[in-house]
Amino acid sequence: MKITGNTKVIGIIGWPVSHSLSPVMHNAAFEHLGLDYCYVPFAIKPECLKEAMEAVPALNIVGLNVTVPHKEKVLKYISEFSEESGMIGAVNTLKLEGNRLIGYNTDGIGFTNSLKEAGYPVAKHSLLILGSGGAAKAVAFQSAAEGVKEIIIANRTVSKALSLKNQMKEYFPLLKIDVTGLSYDELKVVTDMVDSVVNTTSVGLDKGDASPIPGEFLHKGLFVCDLIYNPSETKLLKYAKEAGCRYVNGLGMLIHQGAASFRIWTGIEPPVEVMRQAVESTLFP
Ligand code: ATR
Image: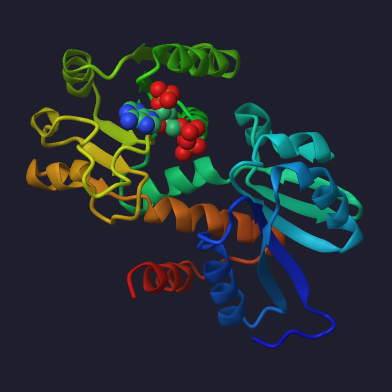
Protein backbone atom coordinates (compact mmCIF):
# COMPACT_ATOMS: atom_id res chain seq x y z
CA MET A 1 0.00 0.00 0.00
CA LYS A 2 1.34 3.40 -1.02
CA ILE A 3 0.23 6.39 1.04
CA THR A 4 0.40 9.65 -0.89
CA GLY A 5 -0.70 13.22 -0.33
CA ASN A 6 -4.07 12.27 -1.84
CA THR A 7 -4.77 9.20 0.28
CA LYS A 8 -8.14 9.35 2.00
CA VAL A 9 -8.15 8.29 5.66
CA ILE A 10 -10.77 6.04 7.22
CA GLY A 11 -10.46 4.63 10.73
CA ILE A 12 -12.01 2.92 13.71
CA ILE A 13 -12.50 4.44 17.14
CA GLY A 14 -12.80 2.18 20.17
CA TRP A 15 -11.24 1.52 23.58
CA PRO A 16 -9.50 -0.84 23.37
CA VAL A 17 -9.19 -1.16 19.61
CA SER A 18 -6.07 -3.30 19.17
CA HIS A 19 -8.12 -6.52 18.75
CA SER A 20 -10.13 -5.12 15.83
CA LEU A 21 -10.00 -7.02 12.55
CA SER A 22 -11.43 -4.10 10.58
CA PRO A 23 -8.06 -2.52 9.62
CA VAL A 24 -6.88 -5.78 8.06
CA MET A 25 -10.23 -6.35 6.35
CA HIS A 26 -10.62 -2.88 4.82
CA ASN A 27 -6.98 -2.33 3.87
CA ALA A 28 -7.06 -5.66 1.99
CA ALA A 29 -10.15 -4.43 0.12
CA PHE A 30 -8.62 -1.02 -0.72
CA GLU A 31 -5.44 -2.65 -1.91
CA HIS A 32 -7.27 -5.24 -3.99
CA LEU A 33 -9.32 -2.57 -5.77
CA GLY A 34 -6.37 -0.15 -6.04
CA LEU A 35 -8.31 2.54 -4.14
CA ASP A 36 -6.31 5.40 -2.64
CA TYR A 37 -7.66 4.93 0.89
CA CYS A 38 -6.11 3.68 4.12
CA TYR A 39 -7.79 2.43 7.29
CA VAL A 40 -6.22 3.10 10.71
CA PRO A 41 -7.07 2.25 14.33
CA PHE A 42 -7.65 5.12 16.80
CA ALA A 43 -7.61 4.05 20.46
CA ILE A 44 -9.89 6.71 21.99
CA LYS A 45 -10.38 6.75 25.75
CA PRO A 46 -13.99 7.37 26.82
CA GLU A 47 -13.06 10.77 28.30
CA CYS A 48 -11.51 11.86 24.97
CA LEU A 49 -14.51 11.09 22.76
CA LYS A 50 -15.66 14.72 22.39
CA GLU A 51 -12.22 15.97 21.30
CA ALA A 52 -11.82 12.98 18.98
CA MET A 53 -15.15 13.67 17.29
CA GLU A 54 -14.36 17.35 16.87
CA ALA A 55 -11.11 16.35 15.19
CA VAL A 56 -12.78 14.20 12.52
CA PRO A 57 -13.84 17.04 10.17
CA ALA A 58 -10.77 19.07 11.15
CA LEU A 59 -8.47 16.25 10.02
CA ASN A 60 -10.70 15.39 7.05
CA ILE A 61 -11.10 11.78 8.15
CA VAL A 62 -13.69 10.73 5.57
CA GLY A 63 -15.17 7.74 7.37
CA LEU A 64 -15.07 5.86 10.65
CA ASN A 65 -16.18 2.68 12.27
CA VAL A 66 -17.26 3.04 15.87
CA THR A 67 -16.93 0.23 18.35
CA VAL A 68 -17.25 -0.43 22.09
CA PRO A 69 -17.65 1.67 24.24
CA HIS A 70 -18.51 4.58 21.91
CA LYS A 71 -21.38 3.24 19.77
CA GLU A 72 -24.12 5.02 21.73
CA LYS A 73 -22.22 7.96 23.23
CA VAL A 74 -21.10 9.09 19.79
CA LEU A 75 -24.69 9.96 18.81
CA LYS A 76 -24.56 13.37 20.43
CA TYR A 77 -21.65 14.48 18.22
CA ILE A 78 -23.15 13.67 14.84
CA SER A 79 -25.41 15.73 12.57
CA GLU A 80 -27.75 13.15 11.09
CA PHE A 81 -28.60 9.46 11.44
CA SER A 82 -29.82 6.84 9.06
CA GLU A 83 -33.19 5.30 9.87
CA GLU A 84 -31.77 2.06 11.32
CA SER A 85 -29.23 3.79 13.57
CA GLY A 86 -32.03 5.98 14.91
CA MET A 87 -34.10 2.89 15.76
CA ILE A 88 -31.19 1.01 17.29
CA GLY A 89 -29.88 4.07 19.12
CA ALA A 90 -26.28 3.24 18.21
CA VAL A 91 -23.97 3.73 15.25
CA ASN A 92 -21.05 1.66 14.01
CA THR A 93 -20.30 3.70 10.88
CA LEU A 94 -19.79 7.41 10.23
CA LYS A 95 -19.36 9.24 6.96
CA LEU A 96 -18.06 12.78 6.64
CA GLU A 97 -20.08 14.86 4.18
CA GLY A 98 -18.70 18.36 3.98
CA ASN A 99 -18.40 19.27 7.65
CA ARG A 100 -21.25 17.02 8.71
CA LEU A 101 -20.99 13.54 10.20
CA ILE A 102 -23.72 11.11 9.15
CA GLY A 103 -24.27 8.01 11.35
CA TYR A 104 -25.25 4.53 10.19
CA ASN A 105 -25.52 1.12 11.78
CA THR A 106 -24.49 -1.80 9.55
CA ASP A 107 -24.45 -4.50 12.26
CA GLY A 108 -28.01 -5.62 11.59
CA ILE A 109 -27.62 -5.78 7.83
CA GLY A 110 -24.35 -7.63 8.38
CA PHE A 111 -26.37 -10.27 10.22
CA THR A 112 -29.19 -10.59 7.68
CA ASN A 113 -26.80 -10.56 4.71
CA SER A 114 -24.70 -13.30 6.28
CA LEU A 115 -27.84 -15.41 6.66
CA LYS A 116 -28.84 -14.68 3.06
CA GLU A 117 -25.39 -15.80 1.97
CA ALA A 118 -26.04 -19.07 3.82
CA GLY A 119 -29.34 -19.44 1.94
CA TYR A 120 -31.55 -18.42 4.86
CA PRO A 121 -33.29 -15.04 4.43
CA VAL A 122 -34.98 -14.08 7.72
CA ALA A 123 -38.19 -12.90 6.00
CA LYS A 124 -41.27 -14.92 7.01
CA HIS A 125 -39.29 -17.02 9.50
CA SER A 126 -39.55 -17.05 13.27
CA LEU A 127 -36.39 -16.13 15.17
CA LEU A 128 -35.30 -16.85 18.73
CA ILE A 129 -32.74 -14.25 19.86
CA LEU A 130 -30.60 -15.18 22.87
CA GLY A 131 -29.48 -11.99 24.62
CA SER A 132 -30.70 -8.40 24.77
CA GLY A 133 -27.55 -6.27 24.45
CA GLY A 134 -26.33 -4.10 21.59
CA ALA A 135 -25.86 -6.97 19.15
CA ALA A 136 -29.32 -8.40 19.90
CA LYS A 137 -30.86 -5.00 19.26
CA ALA A 138 -29.23 -4.64 15.83
CA VAL A 139 -30.25 -8.20 14.90
CA ALA A 140 -33.82 -7.71 16.10
CA PHE A 141 -34.48 -4.36 14.37
CA GLN A 142 -32.98 -5.40 11.03
CA SER A 143 -34.82 -8.74 11.07
CA ALA A 144 -38.06 -6.88 11.74
CA ALA A 145 -37.31 -4.41 8.93
CA GLU A 146 -36.79 -7.37 6.57
CA GLY A 147 -40.10 -9.00 7.41
CA VAL A 148 -39.35 -11.64 10.03
CA LYS A 149 -42.59 -13.42 11.05
CA GLU A 150 -42.07 -13.56 14.80
CA ILE A 151 -39.32 -12.81 17.32
CA ILE A 152 -38.78 -14.38 20.73
CA ILE A 153 -36.20 -12.64 22.90
CA ALA A 154 -34.66 -14.81 25.64
CA ASN A 155 -32.37 -13.18 28.15
CA ARG A 156 -30.84 -13.92 31.56
CA THR A 157 -32.18 -10.55 32.77
CA VAL A 158 -35.77 -10.73 31.55
CA SER A 159 -36.45 -7.03 32.20
CA LYS A 160 -33.86 -6.14 29.52
CA ALA A 161 -35.59 -8.42 27.01
CA LEU A 162 -38.88 -6.72 27.85
CA SER A 163 -37.35 -3.31 27.36
CA LEU A 164 -36.05 -4.34 23.90
CA LYS A 165 -39.50 -5.66 23.03
CA ASN A 166 -41.08 -2.34 24.04
CA GLN A 167 -38.58 -0.35 21.97
CA MET A 168 -39.33 -2.55 18.97
CA LYS A 169 -43.08 -2.19 19.39
CA GLU A 170 -42.76 1.57 18.80
CA TYR A 171 -41.52 0.88 15.26
CA PHE A 172 -43.13 -2.50 14.51
CA PRO A 173 -46.46 -2.47 16.41
CA LEU A 174 -47.89 -5.44 14.48
CA LEU A 175 -44.91 -7.76 14.85
CA LYS A 176 -45.40 -10.69 17.25
CA ILE A 177 -42.67 -10.43 19.90
CA ASP A 178 -42.42 -12.63 22.98
CA VAL A 179 -40.00 -12.50 25.88
CA THR A 180 -38.64 -15.25 28.10
CA GLY A 181 -35.82 -16.20 30.47
CA LEU A 182 -33.04 -18.70 29.90
CA SER A 183 -34.16 -21.51 32.20
CA TYR A 184 -34.08 -25.08 30.88
CA ASP A 185 -37.88 -25.33 30.73
CA GLU A 186 -38.37 -21.92 29.10
CA LEU A 187 -35.75 -22.62 26.45
CA LYS A 188 -37.26 -26.02 25.67
CA VAL A 189 -40.66 -24.49 24.93
CA VAL A 190 -39.40 -21.62 22.78
CA THR A 191 -36.81 -23.62 20.82
CA ASP A 192 -39.62 -25.93 19.72
CA MET A 193 -41.66 -22.94 18.49
CA VAL A 194 -39.13 -21.33 16.12
CA ASP A 195 -37.31 -22.17 12.92
CA SER A 196 -34.14 -20.19 13.63
CA VAL A 197 -32.04 -19.17 16.61
CA VAL A 198 -29.22 -16.67 17.05
CA ASN A 199 -26.88 -16.42 20.01
CA THR A 200 -25.91 -12.80 20.70
CA THR A 201 -24.69 -13.44 24.27
CA SER A 202 -21.04 -13.82 25.16
CA VAL A 203 -21.63 -17.43 26.24
CA GLY A 204 -19.28 -19.46 24.06
CA LEU A 205 -16.45 -16.92 23.81
CA ASP A 206 -14.39 -18.99 26.27
CA LYS A 207 -13.55 -22.41 24.93
CA GLY A 208 -14.78 -24.03 28.17
CA ASP A 209 -18.23 -22.37 28.02
CA ALA A 210 -21.35 -24.48 27.82
CA SER A 211 -23.87 -24.00 25.01
CA PRO A 212 -26.50 -21.33 25.79
CA ILE A 213 -29.12 -23.86 24.58
CA PRO A 214 -28.97 -27.52 25.64
CA GLY A 215 -28.01 -29.64 22.61
CA GLU A 216 -31.07 -31.88 22.94
CA PHE A 217 -33.40 -28.96 22.09
CA LEU A 218 -31.88 -28.42 18.66
CA HIS A 219 -34.16 -30.04 16.12
CA LYS A 220 -33.37 -30.80 12.50
CA GLY A 221 -34.74 -28.00 10.34
CA LEU A 222 -33.63 -25.33 12.82
CA PHE A 223 -31.22 -22.74 11.41
CA VAL A 224 -28.61 -21.83 14.05
CA CYS A 225 -26.38 -18.75 14.09
CA ASP A 226 -23.79 -17.93 16.73
CA LEU A 227 -22.46 -14.38 16.46
CA ILE A 228 -19.20 -15.61 18.00
CA TYR A 229 -16.54 -16.29 15.37
CA ASN A 230 -13.58 -17.08 17.61
CA PRO A 231 -13.67 -19.94 18.48
CA SER A 232 -15.04 -20.70 15.01
CA GLU A 233 -17.11 -23.59 16.36
CA THR A 234 -18.75 -22.94 19.72
CA LYS A 235 -20.52 -25.69 21.68
CA LEU A 236 -23.81 -24.39 20.30
CA LEU A 237 -22.59 -24.87 16.73
CA LYS A 238 -21.09 -28.26 17.54
CA TYR A 239 -24.51 -29.39 18.84
CA ALA A 240 -26.20 -27.82 15.81
CA LYS A 241 -23.95 -29.84 13.52
CA GLU A 242 -24.64 -33.04 15.47
CA ALA A 243 -28.39 -32.40 15.28
CA GLY A 244 -28.23 -31.96 11.49
CA CYS A 245 -29.13 -28.25 11.60
CA ARG A 246 -27.86 -25.70 9.11
CA TYR A 247 -25.62 -23.23 10.94
CA VAL A 248 -23.23 -20.28 10.60
CA ASN A 249 -20.85 -18.55 12.97
CA GLY A 250 -20.41 -14.77 13.30
CA LEU A 251 -17.67 -14.35 10.73
CA GLY A 252 -20.19 -13.65 7.98
CA MET A 253 -21.80 -10.89 10.07
CA LEU A 254 -18.39 -9.30 10.66
CA ILE A 255 -17.56 -9.37 6.95
CA HIS A 256 -20.98 -8.15 5.81
CA GLN A 257 -21.17 -5.28 8.29
CA GLY A 258 -17.76 -4.25 6.97
CA ALA A 259 -18.93 -4.64 3.38
CA ALA A 260 -21.96 -2.42 4.07
CA SER A 261 -19.75 0.26 5.69
CA PHE A 262 -17.37 0.07 2.71
CA ARG A 263 -20.28 0.77 0.33
CA ILE A 264 -21.30 3.79 2.43
CA TRP A 265 -17.78 5.30 2.41
CA THR A 266 -16.75 4.57 -1.18
CA GLY A 267 -19.95 3.93 -3.17
CA ILE A 268 -18.08 0.95 -4.61
CA GLU A 269 -19.01 -2.73 -4.40
CA PRO A 270 -16.62 -4.34 -1.85
CA PRO A 271 -14.57 -7.46 -2.63
CA VAL A 272 -16.24 -9.62 0.00
CA GLU A 273 -14.10 -12.72 -0.56
CA VAL A 274 -10.87 -10.72 -0.28
CA MET A 275 -12.12 -9.25 3.00
CA ARG A 276 -13.06 -12.68 4.32
CA GLN A 277 -9.67 -14.14 3.46
CA ALA A 278 -7.84 -11.26 5.12
CA VAL A 279 -9.82 -11.76 8.32
CA GLU A 280 -9.55 -15.56 8.31
CA SER A 281 -5.81 -15.55 7.75
CA THR A 282 -5.37 -13.10 10.65
CA LEU A 283 -7.63 -15.03 13.00
CA PHE A 284 -6.41 -18.51 12.10
CA PRO A 285 -2.89 -18.14 10.64
P1 ATR B 1 -23.13 -6.91 22.96
O1 ATR B 1 -22.91 -5.47 22.61
O2 ATR B 1 -22.09 -7.86 22.41
O3 ATR B 1 -24.50 -7.37 22.64
P2 ATR B 1 -23.79 -6.52 25.74
O4 ATR B 1 -24.60 -5.34 25.33
O5 ATR B 1 -22.87 -6.40 26.89
O6 ATR B 1 -22.88 -7.02 24.54
O7 ATR B 1 -24.80 -7.76 25.98
C1 ATR B 1 -24.36 -8.99 26.44
C2 ATR B 1 -25.52 -9.99 26.44
O8 ATR B 1 -24.98 -11.26 26.83
C3 ATR B 1 -26.62 -9.65 27.43
O9 ATR B 1 -27.86 -10.09 26.90
C4 ATR B 1 -26.23 -10.49 28.64
O10 ATR B 1 -27.31 -10.85 29.49
P3 ATR B 1 -27.81 -9.85 30.67
O11 ATR B 1 -28.63 -8.80 29.99
O12 ATR B 1 -28.60 -10.71 31.58
O13 ATR B 1 -26.56 -9.29 31.32
C5 ATR B 1 -25.71 -11.73 27.97
N1 ATR B 1 -24.82 -12.52 28.83
C6 ATR B 1 -23.55 -12.22 29.20
N2 ATR B 1 -23.04 -13.19 29.99
C7 ATR B 1 -24.01 -14.13 30.12
C8 ATR B 1 -24.11 -15.39 30.80
N3 ATR B 1 -23.09 -15.88 31.51
N4 ATR B 1 -25.27 -16.08 30.70
C9 ATR B 1 -26.31 -15.61 29.98
N5 ATR B 1 -26.28 -14.44 29.31
C10 ATR B 1 -25.16 -13.70 29.38
